[in-house]
Figure 1 (cartoon, helix red, strand yellow):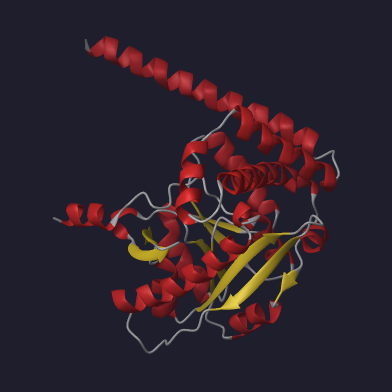
Figure 2 (tube, rainbow, N blue to C red; figure 1 turned 60 degrees about the vertical axis):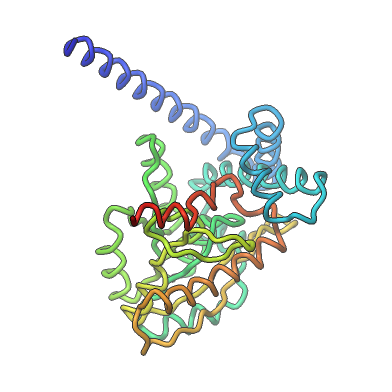
Length: 315
């Protein structure tokens, strides 16, 4: 039985490895083609890829629609489906834009991503204690990081590993090519402290379920588990905290927006103070999502962990 079980495990392992390799080869081949196209064509094709997924391969479509209905109870089904479709189009554009990164220069990224309120970021770095950029999976967040780095501001993203190791390596390579640094979650504490000490920027996305370790913040009038990290690191290190959003524009550009998050650094990083800071960050993100609902990543189960589930775990 032991040998048979090991044989089965080996088969599963090699099948998974072959699948990962095939997925990587497909993306690699697509990238070669995408990088030959002008940006306008990349965006158009990306939107059509999103439409194909929306209509023909409805990955997480049910989750997306249900979360949109809960967030916008006063919108009609027609409006909900229109936002859902826009969401898939944005996903398609983001995917092809990422494959297009190796064809872009720093000047290209600077032109694609104009910045609004750049002075807020400049003042944050001038404090010389590092900067924590907090935002969400909104618009094209990857291009914003690259555009900021291309302007000479050192910024690293905290990233989670992708299951497919070949694609994970390719995506991180593209991030580095765009100018963004990469800190994997497994090494994040040491990497964050080191970067902030050198007055560098750290980008943290706060809009994914944090399970039992998060703090519950109302988001679209419903509590969701939110990471404490941005507020905790800012209070402990004295780093500036700046909210960012990458808003996709009709002309094909992606507007980078910066907003101050005011902190009282004399306060201890208690749960109450962290909750206040993360509530204000969440409210800013929600205001952008309400204005541009099709640009947020509704496919993620943002309200997966409930306060009741967290309480049960603690017991």
